[in-house]
Amino acid sequence: MKNTLLIIALFIGLGNLNAQDASNVATWEETIGFLKKYESKITAYGCDKVYLHIVNGKIQYGIGNRKVLGERYYHIVDLSKLMSVKEDGENSIGLYMSGNYSISKGNFDEPLELHDFNRIYVCDKELNPRIFKAFQHLTYLATEKRIAEAKSSGDKF
Image 1 (cartoon, one colour):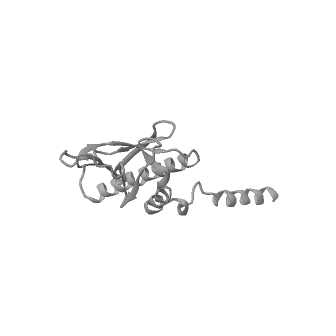
Image 2 (spheres, helix red, strand yellow):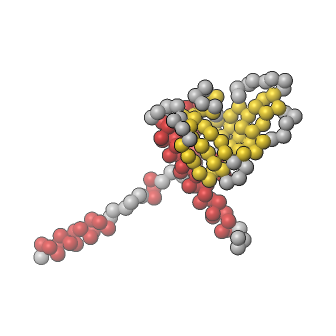
Image 3 (cartoon, one colour):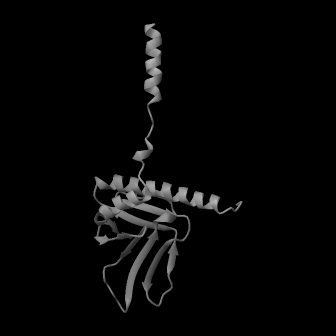
């Protein structure tokens, strides 16, 4: 009788265990909110304080207000097109897109340059792994969104 009660208690106890509760998974907006909260810790071009801003799901940054012969250099990275994220060095995080969705512009007379890669830096040793994890989560969410859009399009390929 004791063994039967023990077995029933174990099944009930194990049945209530979940690997991860769905309510603990951050949404796109929550993840972007986390990155915006710490955007002052995320830089471009190493740890030389070229700060970036996250606006409408895109990373935007420029080289200050520097203008040389009418030049204002800037980058825009569309986070909804993230395909993978890799640690590229001690402080750097590589953002890889599913196509040429990283835009850079130099002189106003030059055409836009399109890239499928961009690198950011987080020089705060405690925040670096958290921000890296947030970008990994955005990659997962962006991929899921693209798959859902492809399925709903009705296209067979």
